[in-house]
Length: 562
Image 1 (cartoon, rainbow, N blue to C red):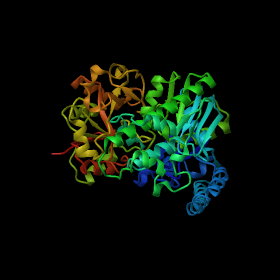
Image 2: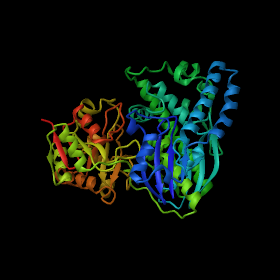
Image 3: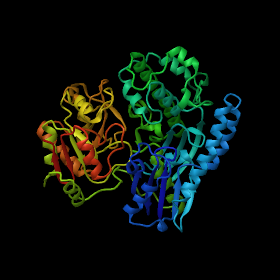
Image 4: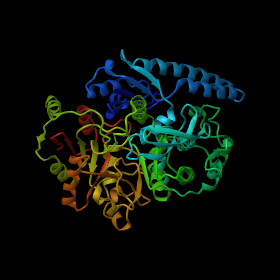
């Protein structure tokens, strides 16, 4: 049976294909259109998934889509009609937008059908939960999904057993942790719904000076849930994208919002730190109540908020669960995986048979195709018979190296297929990469890729973290050895690398360890600040020559700038 899953539409659209219970491919549309956070119908991603699977559209049995449009309209229209008393123009515009948006969504999804294909509109949060639980190593787990908004729910709690997902309860919009964090992101001068990770990085530079007041905005309830004091916000009835998310009450207390490009004051850093701490405390509160209710030791998380790896790391250290699984595309793009597996198990009643261990689910290009591109562009290169050793030598010599190998990753993290690599032992390397390659804010940290069996030697409590979704403290005695990946607060967003999953990347890091005595490299995504991660060899070459990278290892070819 062939199932095509569709994630996202408003933003971050993606496609995934499951054939007879195995995830064959998953791709974000942005990688193909080169428009970051691309929304709409993922036509190109769906076509590429079918191409990788080697099947035609008419061989697809079912298509699972990321949201139920009727349920969305039935919940949102009455709410917006009621808000017309406070904001008539915006409410009318929003109602018109909802009708047009949902019509485009339904019509667009129908375009993906083949002649024998059935179309299914899945419920948003259960599909989120399925994207983690149904590909996790757990036969049973508590489920927690946290995002901006689904059809109407913003935070959702459930239980997964076998192939069944059961809702416990949910918290609805406008009581949304995703809205709260997006509001802070917008207030601090970053792009809402895409730059939340910048707030997370900035938080480490501040102190939670405003924690008590933020904790009054998001109030913990004795039943294990929360509510939000809406007097601090206007975005639940007014256009936050134009007037800001917060009310006059917030600006009177915390000052005017920062404009994009302005300098960062201590006030901004402390607001980020306070918001991050409150988010972590609320999710810890939710997790403790969920564990008490379910008595389960495993947790699966999804939703955009589950990409907050500082929160995830604290939840793992201080929370009640022994194990936590978050899949690499926890946002709306990852629903493509959840929708496909939900449908597969519903239609076949087959037992669980797949665990997601590798995020490299996209297209790949052969060495012959890569060499053809280099030769057509008249780019001199050397062919190496030992890619890991040659790359390790370049990195150990202080070069910033583009690494383009195998299938492209699914999700926002580069995990050893489309990466930029550097020496983590150099104190100046973070500044060099920011200055010559990434051109991004200096407060944002870089991550390590570490050999799995050595992770616990450098990072407290780290045994396995293959998708770079948990922050761990760097052991104090090791921080001086790896300054380029140690954040200002003494932590790192760790990716563990096993030989079983990515032998080429593993062997390269092992060669670097032999040369420098440290079993890790600095790993950041192969792109510049405003673009998606590179997809094709041509894009990799353009990025290489358009930045200050020193060398490019692409397939078995090595290009070194003079």
